Length: 117
Image 1 (cartoon, helix red, strand yellow):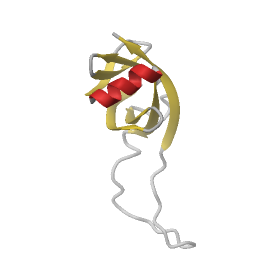
Image 2: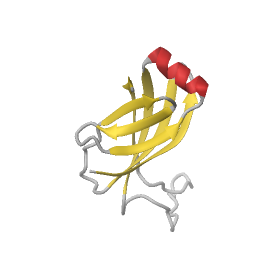
Image 3: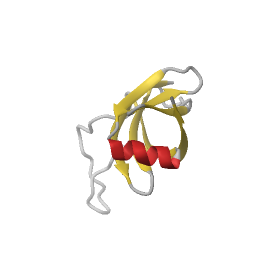
Image 4: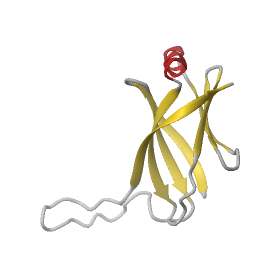
């Protein structure tokens, strides 16, 4: 189950691109079904299953115009799990290439339709 959703950045490339960090409660949680909506200039991410409001941000006029034109937004989602991700306190170097190990993160990129209110 989703614990928190953070909208970190919104860009305009060919369409509106939304960078999102999704924190899950458990590594075996797979239930993240986002629904995107726009009301005036308030962009909202909700859960399709429960209808729960997860995150929202205010958009600029240019971003709203692009969303109205395309009717879709590209979501770039970075999944993280409490207890597994966070700050790496001890860096253990990989001897073979001399680089530090990084925490594993799952991510996805998808085009989602936007509902207009």
